[in-house]
Length: 345
Ligand SMILES: *Cc1c(COP(=O)(O)O)cnc(C)c1O
Image 1: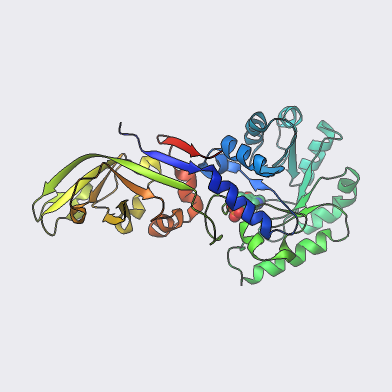
Image 2: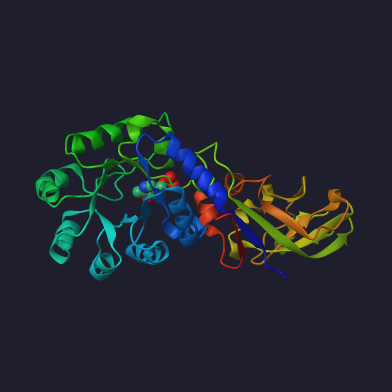
């Protein structure tokens, strides 16, 4: 079988969430948008619910509705994009809590679903989602009469602890929300690590739960094994792959593995990336193709049956560095062709 295997450890996901919850001053939610960062929202959320998570966040109502099927009634499912036109039935039927981002959304929600739960998202400087201070000042009284479940904002630079934006956003958030008596949430993974001033009643980690930076103490969560389809020996001077970018400097053994950029193994990571046979690092040889990658296994001394791209030796953040991106993008790019195996529950 030329299908690569992505192993996802639910036990390690649970351990990472538990560790972030232990660092959090208040309650800890879990962000499971984009299919739990590509790892499978249903399986991940159910595992975290068993671990004690009672609040989840998704990006859009459709994700929330699908998650409700997986979780059943009970846990709160918050929607960052709020209440969009056409969402009212889904929000009501699947008991979602939209994070209201604007006066328009507030009117839409209160008119369509009076008395239904909602939260408020405030903009404290990121300028992406949420009500600005002036908007909030205009509607705060009306909104508070409706009994919001939560007031939240999002940090733009939480992964840079010394960035002055963090303190500026904290100050803005407090100015807009101090004394209102409504539960508050400001911290993503980076915000949890900034310390208790940033925690309020609820923290919202995502990437740290999935083993990524800036949570340096996270346990790795994914392993990716790529089957070797074929091995061949090149004479010195022969080349590998598109564009002849690899030239054998000596007699070289090349293994061709079954995965490529269509599976989220970004072309840009090629030149700096290695695959592992047990503890031996084998460099990528030539360009990453759509479905195939050449790997120099000369120093291994034998032909491997498979090679590991992600796991003990190499993290999503290493691959991200190699490609000039972030771990979030590596995780959410992991392709649909992998055979997905879950460890633990
Ligand atoms: C994605 C997201 C989070 C989680 O952020 P991480 O950096 O992955 O912990 C929290 N809040 C909002 C608004 C988000 O969009």
